[in-house]
Length: 201
Image (tube, rainbow, N blue to C red; front, top):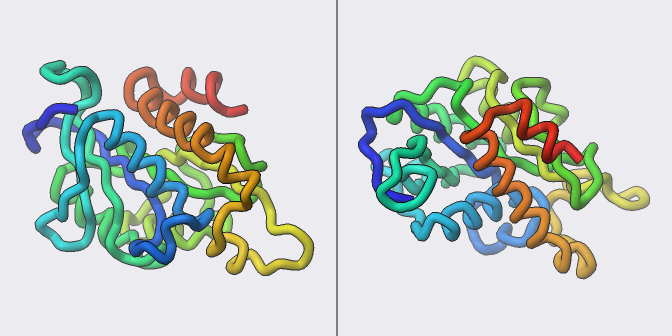
């Protein structure tokens, strides 16, 4: 991923999660994991944005020197339920409209290991999406929804999402993260319809 001027239209890819090492392995942080994978692919490292509200990677999608779409990867420094402010700040700074924002997040109503991609829709109880909608004034942004499934037995949803993946899931997690990263790149390069046909398993 090569450096890109900030004046060209682009995309804002936001990995939803909670900052800090104590949250790193939680199901709620799969968005961070996918953003980390995208940065790794592009040979880039996250740096603090001047707003102080997020860490970002700026560049272009494609081989070094290519004229691919400008992309900003972002991880909020705020907790999940307050991430919308950081997203809104970045969208304004980079002049990116909501319809060019991709949120990567965990999804309870999708089985672990599967994926769904869509534009717009409700929050389905997800505090990160709710915060983004409130700060952006719209829910019309793309979502790459990484399934985590429902909690077993009577475990509370909040406890489930804020807990680590199981031992079995951790073996499969790299494949889900890799596929979600592929889906993000597909959304940017070929659009929603083709991406849904390929990745909405």
